[in-house]
Length: 66
Image (tube, rainbow, N blue to C red; front, side, top):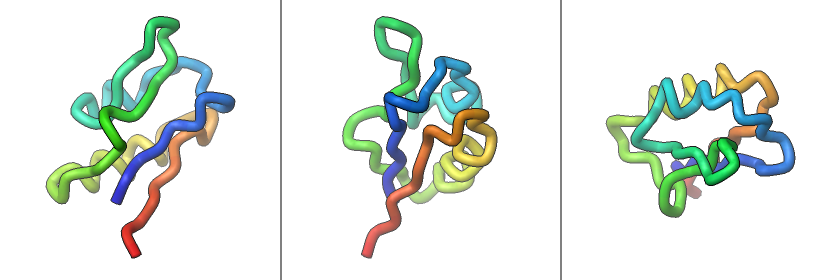
């Protein structure tokens, strides 16, 4: 599973960073972005789903492995 932040939708609320700091970071303008290639370790899947559910702009998506 991977997370992806759509930069066109993100408004910089940064709830995802608070909920899953190992998965997200803020860029130089304060908008969220996924860490690395967005890969979610198995033990962080719940936090990734929580971040998706709590994004007010619905800017975060999960990409499930085939």
